[in-house]
Amino acid sequence: MANIFAFAEQRAGELRKVALENVTAARALADATGGEVHVLLAGSAGIAQKAEQLGKHGADVVLVCEHDALKDYNAEAIAALAADRIKSGGYRVAVFSTSAQGRDLIPRVAAKLGVGIVTDVTDARIEGDAVNVKHPVNIGKVIATASIASTPAVIGLRPGNTTLVENTKAARVEQVQPVGDPSASRVKVKEMKQGTSAKLDIGEAPVVIAGGRGLKSADGFKLVDDLADAFGNAAVGATRAVCDDGWRPHSEQIGQTGRVVSPDLYIAVGISGAIQHLAGMRTSRTIVAINRDKEAPIFKIADYGIVGDVAEVLPALTAAVREARKSH
Amino acid sequence: MKIAVCVKRVPDMDARFRISADGTSLDEAGLKFDINDFDAWAVEAALQLKEKAGQGEVVVLSLGPAAAQETIRKALSMGADRGIHLAADRIPFDGFAIARALAAELKDGSYDLIFFGKMSPDSSNGIVGPIVAELLDYACVTAISGLEMADGRGTAKRELEGAQEFVEFTLPAVLTVDEGLNTARYPSLKGIMAAKKKTLESKPAQLGDTMVTIKSLAMPPDRPPGKIVGEGAAAVPELVRLLQTEAKVL
Ligand SMILES: Cc1cc2nc3c(=O)[nH]c(=O)nc-3n(C[C@H](O)[C@H](O)[C@H](O)COP(=O)(O)OP(=O)(O)OC[C@H]3O[C@@H](n4cnc5c(N)ncnc54)[C@H](O)[C@@H]3O)c2cc1C
Ligand SMILES: Cc1cc2nc3c(=O)[nH]c(=O)nc-3n(C[C@H](O)[C@H](O)[C@H](O)COP(=O)(O)OP(=O)(O)OC[C@H]3O[C@@H](n4cnc5c(N)ncnc54)[C@H](O)[C@@H]3O)c2cc1C
Image 1 (tube, rainbow over the protein chains, first blue to last red):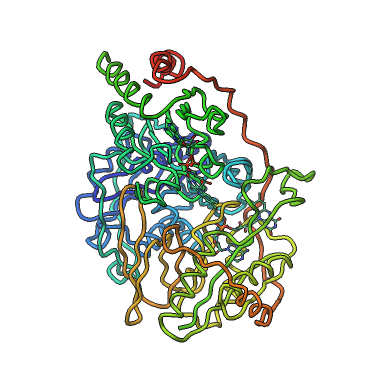
Image 2: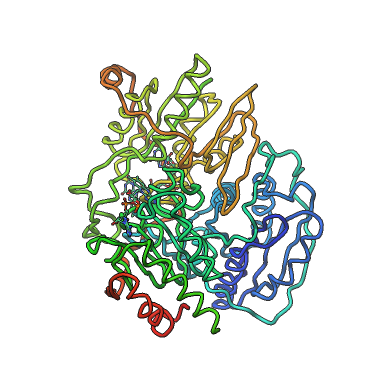
C-alpha cells in the first residue's frame, strides 16, 4: 500500500484545471497499490471551500492551509509547506503539474527533500522499487522512460495530458499550518495581471486555433478570433514569427520555446509547420491545416488539410462551424 | 556586481535523432551543437547588467565533456570575463546531480546573481536553476521575461498561462531566463579574438549519486497519415463533416 500526495494549484482563489489533473493521476497511482490520495491546497481564508471539488476527483484527504500571505503564489512558503507535508506523510509519489507555477515549485520541493524529480511527465507507474515515468525529450522527437529510485519520487505532469475522472467519495478536510512565516519570503508577487477571464487558456481549451504569418498582419488575426468565437470553446495561439512581429503576445506562442498544448482539435492557419512549432502541438488529438502552399510541412502532420487562401477558407469555415454548433 | 551564468551545450533540434545501441542514449555523430538559446539570453542579461553598472564580473560555467569549453568560449566572445568548465565525460540524466555539482562550485564565489536558462530543448526538465538556489539558499525567480535592478533589489516579470506576474526579490538571487527578456548579441570579430585570451579553468565535476536514470528511449508513434480534404472554400463542408463524424470533435 502506498499513499500518494498531490498538489492543488489555485489562482485568484479558483482551482486551476491542472489541480484536478494532479488529483486524477494521483488517484490512479493510489488505486494501483490500494493507498490513499492526500491533496495539499493553500490559499487565503476561504480556500477550504474548494476541497469538495478535489474530493470529487479522487482526494481522500484535503490538507488545507489558509493564510493571507498565501493568496498569490508564494514560492518559498509553499515549497516549505509542501516539502514538510510530503516528508511527514511518508508518500510514495508526490504529483505536481509542469505548469508555469509547477515548474517554479517542484524543483524547490525536490531539493528540500533531496529526492529524484522528473518534470513534463506523460505517464507514471509504480513498478517494484522504482517509479517509472515517460518524459518527452529533444522537443518531443524522442520519448524517454526514466526511472526514479528515491522515495518519494517527485513528478510534474505535462498539463492537459490527463483526462479528468470523477469519483463519488467525499474528502476529509484537515487544516494544516504554514511552515515558518509565509510573509517573510524573499520573493513577493507585487502584481498579477490576469487576461480577460472570459478568454480560455491555450493549455486548457479543448480547441486551439493557431495562426501564423499567412494571416499577413495583426488585423488579419480577426479571422482566427472569429473562428474561435464560432467554436465557443476555443483559444487562440500563434507561431513565434507572429509573436516576434508583435501581432500577438508571447503568452500565446506555441512551440519549442513557447507553450506545449494537446487539445482535442488544433487548427493551424497560415502556419508553415517548422519543427520548432510542431514541438508544441504534435500530440494534439486531431490536427487540421489550412495553407495555400500544398507543399507546406504542416500538411505532413495534419489529419485533414485544406489547400487555400485563409481570406477565402476561414470565413467559410467560421460560418459552417457556427451552423454546426447551432444544431447541437 | 558579481554575476555567474550557467550555460549548456545542446544539439540542434532540426536533426534526425538516432538512438544508440545501448538504447539509453542518443547517437551524437553528425549532430551540430551550440549554446542553449535560453542560456544565450541569460548571458546577454548578465552583460547588460554589468554594462549598466559600469563595473563587475561575469563568470560563465558549463558542466560536460571537453566540448563544453566551446560553449563557454562563445559566451566569452559575447563579452563574459572568464569561464569555468566542470569536466565530466558522461553526465547522468538527473538534473539534481548537475545542480549539486554546479552549486559546489558556485558556493564560495560570493555571486550576487546567478543566471540560468528556463530550460533546454533536449532534456527540458528546467530544474537545475531552482535546485541550485535551494542548495545555496538564494532567493529564486524562474522564467523571467522582464528584469529591473535598483538599490540591491530586483523586479521581474513572469509569463503565466493567460496572466503576467510581477515579483520583487532580494539579492543574492538565482534567475532563470525565458524568451522575450532580450535579444542575444552576436560575438564580434574583436570579441572572438579577445575570448581566446580569457581565462578558462577546467576541473572535474563533483557529481554525486544519481536518483534518476534513463531506462529506455523510443521514437514517438507515427501519426496516422492525414489527407488533403480539398482546395479552397469548396472543401469546407467536407471538412466539417469529417470533424463531426470521423474525428468527433465538433
Ligand atoms: C531556437 C528556435 C526556437 C523556435 N521556437 C519556436 C516556437 O516556440 N514556436 C514557433 O512557432 N516557432 C518557433 N521558432 C520559429 C520557427 O522556426 C518558424 O520560423 C516559425 O514557426 C514560422 O512561423 P509561421 O509558420 O507563422 O511563418 P512562415 O514559416 O513564414 O509560414 C507562413 C505560412 O503561411 C502560408 N501562407 C501565406 N499566405 C497565406 C494565405 N494567404 N493563405 C494561406 N496560407 C498562407 C505560407 O504558405 C507559409 O506556409 C523557433 C526557431 C528557432 C530557431
Ligand atoms: C536522452 C538524454 C540523454 C542524456 N544523456 C546525456 C549524456 O550522456 N551526457 C551528457 O553530457 N548529457 C546528457 N544529457 C543531458 C543531461 O541529462 C541534462 O543536462 C540534465 O538533465 C539537465 O537537467 P534539466 O533538464 O533540469 O536542465 P535543463 O532544462 O536542461 O536546463 C536548465 C538550465 O540549467 C543550466 N544547465 C543545465 N545543464 C547544465 C550544464 N551541464 N552545465 C551548466 N549549466 C547547465 C542551464 O542554464 C540551463 O538553461 C541527456 C539528456 C537527454 C534528454
